[in-house]
Every structure is written in structure tokens, then in C-alpha cells.
Amino acid sequence: MIEKINKIKEELAGLKAANAAEVEQLRIKYLSKRGEISLLMNDFRSVPAEQKRELGQKLNELKNYATERINALKESFAAQADNAAADIDLTRTATPMPVGSRHPLSTVKNDMLRIFAGMGFTIAEGPEIEDDWHVFSSLNFPADHPARDMQDTFFIARNPADILLRTHTSSVQTRVMEKTQPPIRIVCPGRVYRNEAISARAHCFFHQVEGLYIDKNVSFADLKQVLLYFAKEMFGAQTKIRLRPSYFPFTEPSAEMDISCDLCGGKGCAFCKGTGWVEILGCGMVDPNVLEACGIDSKVYSGYAFGMGIERITNLKYRVKDLRMFSENDVRFLQEFEAAR
Ligand code: DAH
Image (cartoon, rainbow, N blue to C red):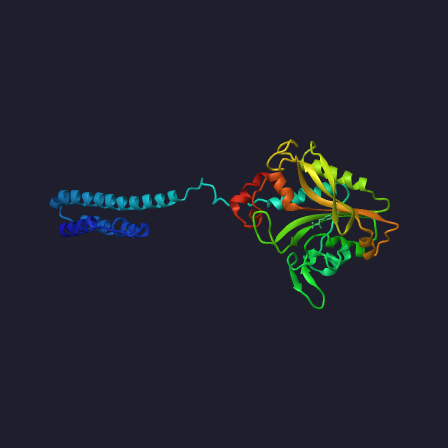
């Protein structure tokens, strides 16, 4: 029996387990009712009386030692399990997802459309790939007008019809007038293309909002009032406007509109080149030739039109120095407009 006790003691000294399940196996092997130590306890009954004292003590020591060893192993695995649980910090926030922001051109476009919608204008859109008729001919461009030149226009096909990328959203005017009889009151937002060298101040594509109002007895005074209201809504109630005579094939008379420079309050600064004014759009009374080309009786109806660049308006509001930033998709630039959403 002594031998058995010593053998088990040796085994216990070198006891090893790879995981908690193996520890449990060892517990069953040594300490359960049918375990090796319990079996020795059974044998103990038949031990001669004079050896009982010594063996009894040894057996008890063995049992305590086994309990101690197995508990120590158990604890080491319990601690490991705790550590594994501790690696997952349940109080941590989930992986942060960067929230996107609206592109500044979209924000400004939406502002513009909201202002005109408030005056009863509805939105009309047209294709970016256009034909000569909608972009030029219907809008009273003479056949030899320089805007048709290859240097300004991206032509897609020369024959049989001239297919091109629209150079302005005025083409949507024609598309709507061809299909609708007055009253017509529309704003046409969209992308336009011009064959320009890309620089801080020019790009081969940009965005415009075109406006058109056709009805009986529409006057230049109506145009001026609508544009003044727009300027004040867009740039603040202190904003002044001025109209300078200009030329566009599709309007007669034509004008360009300036707003008072809000950087210097009209006193004159580097931004407005000392004039106190900055140009924001072109406008005029729709030329009777355009109405007739689109099937509208110019003796009954008159109307006004205006067109402006969304990049230009955005620059005036946010002073973006380089046009290219609008299309480079640099998130650092876009994030600067998060507050303006
Ligand atoms: N289409 C012109 C451009 O691209 C802008 C414009 C000027 C539109 C005068 C108009 C207008 O409707 O009346 O520069």
C-alpha cells in the first residue's frame, strides 16, 4: 500500500492538463468515489491494526495533496478564462463609422432650388448628351457663332447630326418649351461640359442652374424682382444687385448681374478687384426667335431667362480657391462642409 501511495504521490507531483476538461478527468481519476484514492481508502479497511495509524495519516496526506494539486490546476484555467473574457471590453463603443457629408455643390444647389421653389418654379432636367439643335440652333446661335467651335464644345459625333456634350443647361429650356405651352416656370439644374484646360479657375465640367419664365405680359421688372429676392435669400438681406447690359444670342435685351461684395461690404477689396461688386449670372428677356423656334407664339407670350454657375455661387459663399477641389473627392475638403449640411 505504501508503494501505491508513493506512486500516486509522484504522479500528482507531475500532474499536467491542457484545459479545464482534462483537469476534470484527473479529478475523476484520483478523487471521485471510484477514483484511485477512494479505492485505497477501501483497501485501508483490511489493513492490520498496527499499521492503521501510519497508513491512515499517509492516506489523508495523499488525499489533501491530490485535492490541492487539482484545485491549483483548476484555478489556473479559471484565471485564463477570466483573462479571455477581459480581452473583450463590452463597454467600448463599436468601431466608429465615418459619417459622410453632403457635397458643397449639392448643398448650394439645394439651397438655390429651394429659394426658386418658394417662388413657384418647378424643376426640369434634360440630357447631358445633346444635339446641336437644343444647345445652339434653337437658342438663336448663328451658324458661325464661336461657341460652337471645337475649342469650347466636346463633340461626340459629327454625322449625321451633331451630337455633343451640352455646354449649358439652357438646352433644357428648349426641351420644355417644345413640349409645354405657357405658363412655364422652371429651374433646370445640371452638369455642363466645356473643352477648357483644367486649372484652379476653369474645369472641363461644372454645374449650372437655368431659370425660365414664360407667360403673358412678363416684363424685365419681373425678372429683376425675382433675381433681387434670390440674391437676398442666398447671400443675406443686406445684399444689393446691379444689372449691366450684355449679350447672349437667346435673350434680348440681355444683362449680367452683380451682387454687392459681402467680403468688404461694397467698399472694394482684393476679392471684388476693388469694384465692390461680383458677377453672379447672365439673364435677359427670351428672344422672340427662341420662342418661335420652340413653337410658342411670341406675339402672345414673353418671358425671361437666367443662368448661373453653381460653383461660382458656392465660391462666393465658401471662398473655395481652387475649382479642382470640387471634383477631387478629397475627404479632408469634403469634411470641411459637414456643418453646412
Ligand atoms: N447659358 C449661359 C451660359 O452658359 C448662361 C445664361 C445667360 C443663361 C443668360 C440664360 C441667360 O438663360 O438668359 O453662360
